[in-house]
Length: 202
Image (cartoon, rainbow, N blue to C red; front, side, top):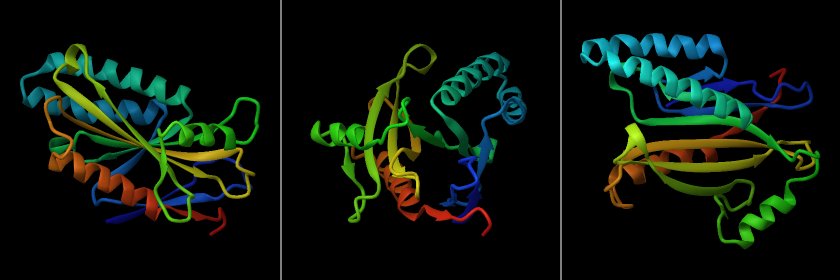
């Protein structure tokens, strides 16, 4: 495992974070320059596989993904860096807040009451929930499992929270107890639990 420090919140009074990640994973800032570099690195993989058709498709897919993540407050995507042996997994780092600047307590309470979320830790500082989405079109025959972790930003009076969103792509017929699904959730749980806030000047 390697330690990755990212200053993500952009406000002087807010801390940064330190994430403990598997060896070979890297943070990709969600800007045009870094996303263009990712698609460039993937291109030779498609050429070696004699699938130039996938180049344009994946480039468009990444562009749509980037637009959606930015709209949702995404700042970084954390991915396995070896494009030749890439795992169908990613972790997105976002900061979320209510539009009116109010506390997030009501939103959290509604999720807990509906049984759609639970606390991951004994201190009840990490709220977690998951969902699975069937793939359509080119992604038919797959399911994307998504694991979310909401962690309040220190000194923000529960008005802003860090959101870690881990994704894992599996075959649509994979059972819930499939080792790849279990391992992915265990990995994302461990990353969320090991996350540490770090003062900007540290």
